[in-house]
Length: 236
Image 1 (tube, rainbow, N blue to C red):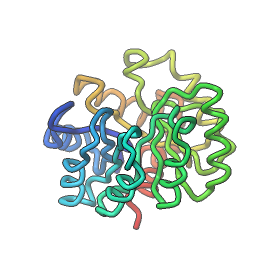
Image 2 (spheres, helix red, strand yellow; image 1 turned 120 degrees about the vertical axis):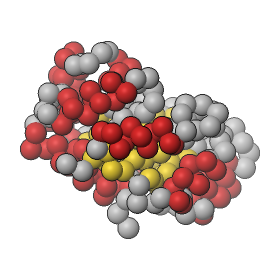
Image 3 (cartoon, rainbow, N blue to C red; image 1 turned 45 degrees about the horizontal axis):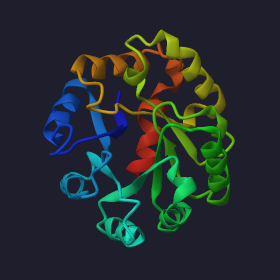
């Protein structure tokens, strides 16, 4: 089965270089990965280089310094490199920097929105998604079921290792609720590499999801583990 990972990290100053991720991917049957810039890094050049070298293998998501008075110019600059299909925003920044979100939507970028999702942020996200129906929004780390009515919102099945240990039986009701609300077409598998710290955890999450033991039916797995992320991040 082809697997597309919708959210992972790599870097030279934090986390691991792309060669380490490449090795994990090869050993565990992952064909493509979306590289999201890690928090605190606003020079997205490393991911740009990786994506441009192998665009069929990697897609890019950049990050900007919201406090930079030229942040809007930075969004345009990284978009125009051609290496990035999306931008990463902390969820609460919709309340503090709504104009930058709107600018990113205008530039036709996908938005990867980092958890958590408190009620005020979720309400603002619902309004934003409704006003920008062509902007694809991907919520990290099990997101929230509260935005399921917005058809342009997608949720990552990811970050389980931040909440517990495999086999994550305590998370199954939450994942089943996401499946019930969003359906198979708007959930995406994501590893969150290398935050899980061990290759065993990386492999376990793939196998638990692929086998249906995380609450998503096996018939839906090809969409959740490949086709949805492929459509969002790699289709041209």
